[in-house]
Image 1 (tube, rainbow, N blue to C red):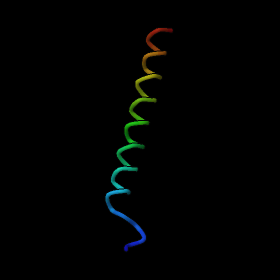
Image 2 (image 1 turned 180 degrees about the vertical axis):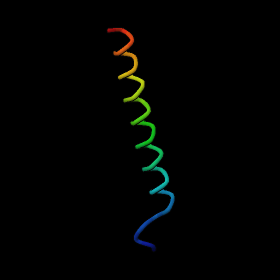
Image 3 (image 1 turned 135 degrees about the horizontal axis):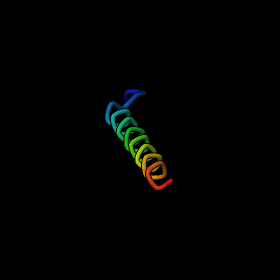
Image 4 (image 1 turned 90 degrees about the vertical axis):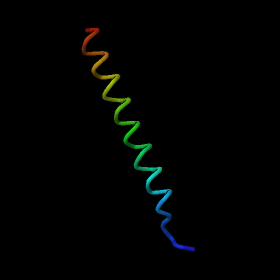
Length: 34
């Protein structure tokens, strides 16, 4: 078994990307509200 699973890495990057997009959306939302 390989130590690093490409699928896991891809999933982690996708998750991180989704979290960053969500954070950006929340910040923009707050900025527009305020």
